[in-house]
Length: 170
Image (cartoon, rainbow, N blue to C red; front, side, top):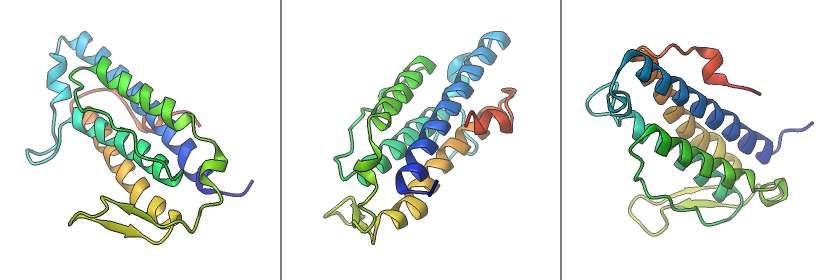
């Protein structure tokens, strides 16, 4: 099987969002078992100038849906960032998985030379020569940064998770 933009993106986003969802379930169980206020984990940061866990999960979701939509030449679905609980984060991940799961290979593959512009017409506008450059140099690294940071926040706060939890099922 050859690697296409679809196979390099959608299955990867699905795998990692599912593992993130599982890690959040373990964090919930940990908080309940140790009688920790869930907000202590949801608002945990690695350093004061970094986003808390809640925002890391929102951003992982944003990069998965945004990258997938842009690769398919679609408008990026807009989600309000109103999540305040683990169940809210599970719902957001489920919504993101439903969206990216609705995309077919034909919507992404065959458009490899399509230029992708993010934040068009703004001072922060950024142009990517083609889909591959966008996905491999921007979309995936951003996505993995936020998933990894969410994992690190939970591990740092005592949630018993490891590499197998991070990688998830494939």
